[in-house]
Each structure stands twice: as structure tokens, then as C-alpha cells.
Length: 47
Image 1 (cartoon, helix red, strand yellow):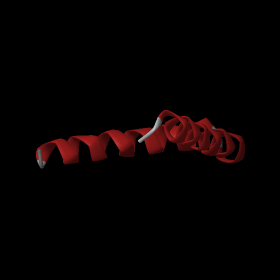
Image 2 (cartoon, one colour):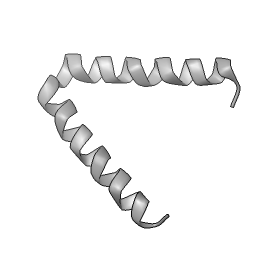
Image 3 (cartoon, one colour):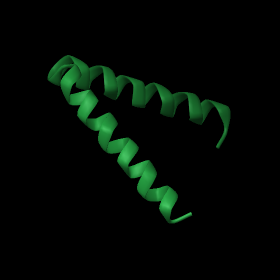
């Protein structure tokens, strides 16, 4: 992955998170964060 692609991807993800915070509020982001950490732990099991 080149630097410009990584920067664009990071901006898209940050923009999606900003829209999510604006539409659903912070509680929704906390729920998604907990689920993301559970996914990371599950993926570490398969390593």
C-alpha cells in the first residue's frame, strides 16, 4: 500500500467515524469499540 492510498483510506475511515458520531452520538461508538476489541481478541486466537 502506498502512502497516498493509506492517507486517503485513513481520511475515509475518520470521516465515517465523524458522521457516525454526528448521527448516532458517542454511545454508539463505544459499543462499536467494544465489539472491535472483541474481534481483535478472537482474531488473536487464530494466530
